[in-house]
Amino acid sequence: MRVVVLSDTHSPRFWKGLPDAVAAHLEGADLILHAGDVCTAPVLKALEQWAPVRVVMGNNDLPEVAQWGAPETLEMDLAGLQVAMIHDSGPAKGRAARLGRRFPSAELVVFGHSHIPMDLTEGGLRILNPGSPTDKRRQPHRTLAVLQIDDGRLISASILPLL
Image (cartoon, rainbow, N blue to C red; front, side, top):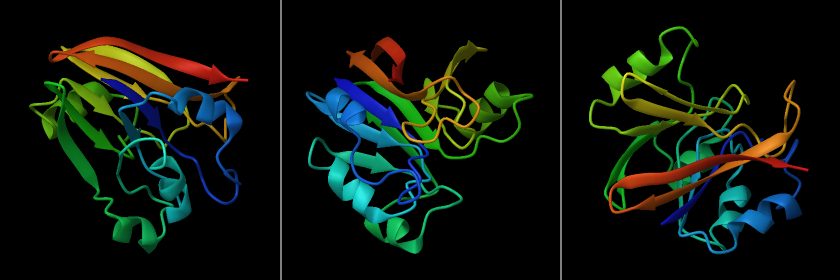
C-alpha cells in the first residue's frame, strides 16, 4: 500500500490549487492522509480525484472540513499497520510518550501543526510529521511524506522535499 501524507496545506492562503510538485507524488497512491489545517473542503475534493482521503481537523479548519467528515483524531488499520492521526501533538518535550498513551494500539502516529517535518521512533512508537507542501515557514523546503506499507509492516517512510 502506497500512502501519501500531507498536512498544513492552508487553503486558500497558500494552496491556490493542486501544486504540480504534489500531484507528481499522488500518481499511484492507494490512500492520502491529511493531518489537518486543510482549511477549506475544495482541497479534499481535489485530492480525492487521485485516491481516497482520510483527514483530521486542524485548528484552522473551517466547519466545511468537519462536514466533509474530518474528526479530531483517527485510528485505522492500513494493510495491517495500526496508524493514528491527530493535527496538534502538543509540545515537543515528551511527544512520543504522550502520543503512545493517547493511542496505545498505534504503531505509527501521523501529526501536523508545526510545519516541521519529522520521522522519529521512540519507545517503540514511530511518529511522523510530513511538514507542509505549501507553507515551509522556517524549513528549507516544502515537504510531504510517502509511506510504503505491506503485510502489517511499514516498509519505508520518506519525507520528500518539494522543489
